[in-house]
Length: 220
Image (cartoon, rainbow, N blue to C red; front, side, top):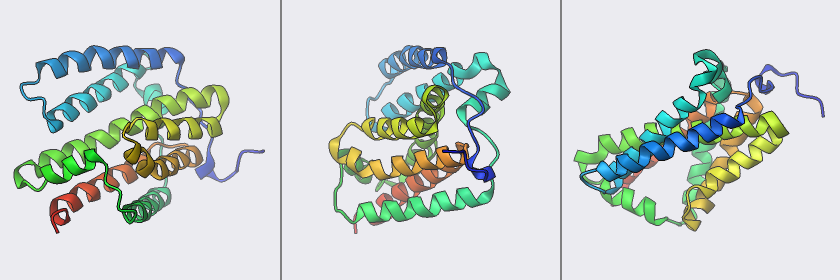
């Protein structure tokens, strides 16, 4: 099938080499293990901060040898119009609302809900779960993994593999089930726009709404 001519449906012009994936895995393990070991408190928020912080640094290390410009392009940081960003946010919000009506609440979500009712931890939780976590997840799954698979087997394979991997990474079966539709939507955005920007924006806003909702509506 021919590639669509719409500029939103652009091809991936920069592939992620295999050594970048190995470099990411090595760097992530080398950073997260001592970081967790050195934590004075191994509670949820510090652990998540260490985990996602390590992922952010490892993602940068993985593409550093490509050079700043090529590295960002390989991860999918390309200019995109405002329409895909707005569409991404709107559909993500609708999907999240629909999934929430199922009444399924994973254990991890329950822990966040209980924690953010304390106003003192709301801002740190937002910084970690609404900014750091979605940024790192997008860099890893729809940046590095997507770019590596797309460079070998094409965009459709990258869309499917990155979406499944994203859902599976949430580990808890109930959580996997709940995030699978979002994973497919974020993957579709990456595939059809050729840019990581729409999925990052949609992911961050979705997580921000979820955390704020847990803080202000969780006890209602």
